[in-house]
Image 1 (cartoon, protein in one colour):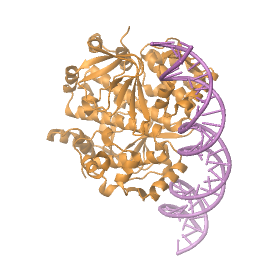
Image 2 (image 1 turned 90 degrees about the vertical axis):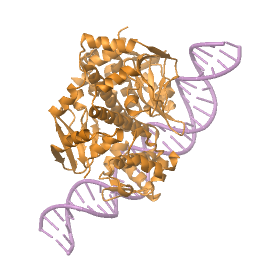
Image 3 (image 1 turned 45 degrees about the horizontal axis):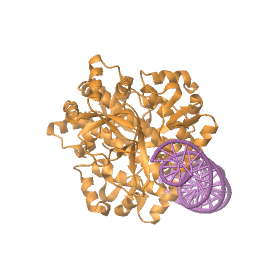
Image 4 (image 1 turned 135 degrees about the vertical axis):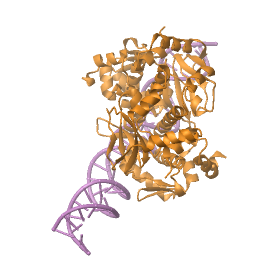
Length: 252
Length: 252
DNA sequence: CGTCGGATTGAAGATACTCAACATGAGTGG
DNA sequence: CCACTCATGTTGAGTATCTTCAATCCGACG
């Protein structure tokens, strides 16, 4: 059986014989098997290992409060499950085996070796791309399992938080130069439907868009409508996190 | 005006004074401004610089053949536009300024310095996470701008290609142990609608699911239905790419 | 042979779309 | 300063896709 991770990585660039051995060693040392429908990783896990799918099929997924769920990605042989926990701290989603699945388990030390190679700056850039991915996954959940009102509310909450991170959200007001057409392109709706939904949110006194700015009138209520949980943004030290703690009764 | 990239990165971990200077230097050397609705980067670009949003708002987007488009992410101050081109080769999507936008432009040499720091293996891992992001973006397009039939067809095409990369798609047949319920969770539909749509595809003799396997009966036609363009998977050396070139008249 | 999860089908209803008209408001030129 | 224009926003009516709920079927497995 050829090594699927090796085959995959060689799509990118041919590896030297030494590197090939490195990969093989990485994936053959320790294995774990998971029966169908069992959890490989749960939301909140902060494992000291990483898992690479060798055989079988697994799915990344997020559960929603209403019981529905959204699968954001399928993991086939060669795919890495949880590279991000080493950078982001904890899993913001779960991974489940779909069929009988065999994973290579790479111990903490090996990963830490790789990470110490990196400078703080490279590591920070890596963190940045990984949070970007988390945002993309959340957008998939938006499109797959939330209706127009929730979707817009969620987008607004996310933008507010992100602007808070860079210190540009005074008084829960953020720059918002988007046309409704563009907002529709972002949310996967039509501009007509965005218009009607925006009107609902305005009538509820939740938000208001005026002169290129989005005024969030009732952040706590909006977060409730959106079922907004900022965990996926992986904030650690920032002002945004403190403001969430203060404003959102959801997290209590 | 505080440096937004600095503020963002410090969400991850406090940076030393030296690193702070490094970031500042990176973002202040060269700037470019973009008027509203102008392109910052176009699909297909393979720039020798990277762009970081300093002021304004920009959007990542993909255009579809039918003229619709899907915005996959908004870029606010501190966000990096195109870190991936250095690893993936070329942009698989465009970036447009929404408002008047100022970007820091970091020259090629600085990035190459960062990259040479990395071993081939770390670089390959980075490539892997970046293609994963590209797949997530494509899933957003699926959910936002394709109907059930196109969405399923597109997922099937993607899975086929990914299995080909790791050499596990003999005769256009791939493992497919998913229930329709799980397929629904992945596509953002209900299992009932997945069932009906699957029936359509079966009646058209495009695909067939039997005993945990997906048989793709007419790959060329399926790719046409899905408007499948494998560019976003960033294949370079692989068998999958050769098979695409042979099978898909779309690419001719 | 019975049971149970998953697949399939039908019918009714909701969310979101299309098409089309009309309003508003900023900017332009007479 | 007003009329005109053009892009954007707003609203209505009819329609389509997709959902919900419910019944039935099928096949694997004890």
